[in-house]
Image (cartoon, rainbow, N blue to C red):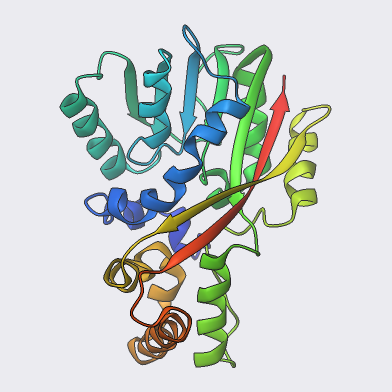
Length: 266
C-alpha cells in the first residue's frame, strides 16, 4: 500500500475539523489582507471572480460587496458547508456559488473569469505551480491572478518560530503557510505557469487583540504543532506564553503581519 505523503495541511479532513472556529482564528488574521488582494486584482462591479481555497469565504464576501459575482471553491467540504451557511446568513447566496473542488484541477472552461484570487490557499497545494497554471487557463485576457503567502518577517511567524526553537531546539521548525516566504520562489511559480511578467510585493497588516485570544487560538492556526507529541506541544505553548508575557506584560498584544502578494496578468 502506498503511504499518503500529504501533510495535514493538504488533507481535507484537517480543514473539515476546523470549520466551526476558522473564522475566529485563521480568518481573523488572513482576512486582514483581503482588501489588498482584491485591490491588486482590481475587482469591481460586474467582475466574475474565482476564489480558490476559499475557506469560509472572506474573499468571496468582500468581492460581493464590490458588486462582483463569485465562484468559491475549496477541497474541504466542511469549509464549503460553513461558507454556504454564511452566505445564507448574509443573504448573498445568490451572488456566490460555493462548491467542493481541487484548485489544481479546476472544472471551469478556459477564459471564464476576470480575476482569480487565493488568499493564503495556494501555499498549501502539493503542486502550487499546477494551481497557478489552472488560474492562468481560466482567466480572460487581461485578467489577474493574485495569491498571498506569509513571509518570514511578520511578528506572528517569528514569535511562533522563536517559541518552537526555545522549547525544542532539537526539532526542526515546520510551520504552515510559509512556502512562498521567498518572493523569488513565488515569482518563479507564476512564470512556470505562463504569466509573463508577474510582480511580487510585500503586504502589511496589524492586529491588536487580547492575550486570551492569542493563547487560545495560536496553535489552531499552526497545525504543524498538532503533529507533535503532547509533551512537546506543551513546551511550545509555555514558551510562546512566556515570550508574549516578556514583550507585553499585562497589556493587549499588537502584532505586525507581513505577506508576499503576487500578481500575474493573463
